[in-house]
Amino acid sequence: MRVKINEISLKRIYNAISRRFLNLPYKVSWNFSKRGIKNRNNLTAFKDIHKGKRCYLVANGPSLKQMNLSFLKNSISFGLNRIYLAYDNMGFKNDYLVCVNGTVLNQFANEIQLLKITKFLNWENKKYFKQENSINYVYKSFAGRNFGNDISKSINPAATVTYAALQIIYYMGFSEVIIIGMDHNFESKNKNRPNELELRTEEVDNNHFHPNYFPKGSKWETPDLISSEYFYKIARKKFENDGRKIFDCTIKGKCQVFEKRNISDFQNSVQN
Image 1 (spheres, rainbow, N blue to C red):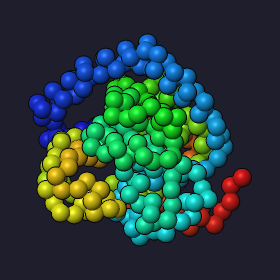
Image 2: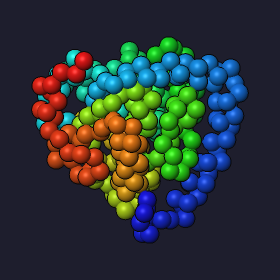
Image 3: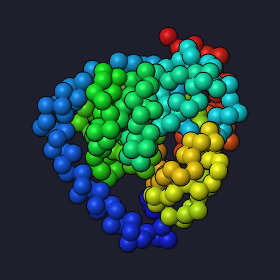
Image 4: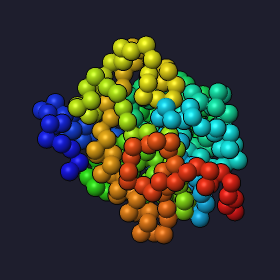
């Protein structure tokens, strides 16, 4: 099951229905506005541009602090949400950033706008950003079990930005994905209530690699680990059916969906 019975609430049901209803105007503008059409055409340029290549998918867990990430300077990598807070201290910079969570985009749009890397952001939050060539928008379609094969049409946001990134990675043609920093373990006041909007009151954010990832006074959505695993299994099957692989090299990561490997297996190997 994607959710446990004790996780279901009237508020969660209401939010799910409201989200789909409020999404309709964005679907119309995505399909018919000049900006939407141009953006969709731009996305088609990413089709298979890295076919057969390896990439690294850098999540935001505290386990990143136990790694030397300088090797990413010579590798193609994707970062998620506020991963840019690691760039200076950890000695790397991603090639691509994926951020489709409205709560993150609403609060940190100015920081994300300034990043000089290719970005994939949520179409619904475009009003927070100035138009520039490095920004590409994706449309989140709440499509049940679907894995978005074509990001120029839509992606399925599911329960985690990691799943959204895997759809973009698949579209680009990568044959091997190495995941790091996906600890799959969170502390929360509302741990039994996934997808709840929660005000951060702690001085230090222990759920992420940076103490001010979600600083005190900011908001975040409590994770849904069960649904995340449900969609990770879909992603794994999708990749493997196409002869591609996803490996999880997170240090002490608790997700058991993807094949576990040690990052050293890949750091010392060269892929042409």
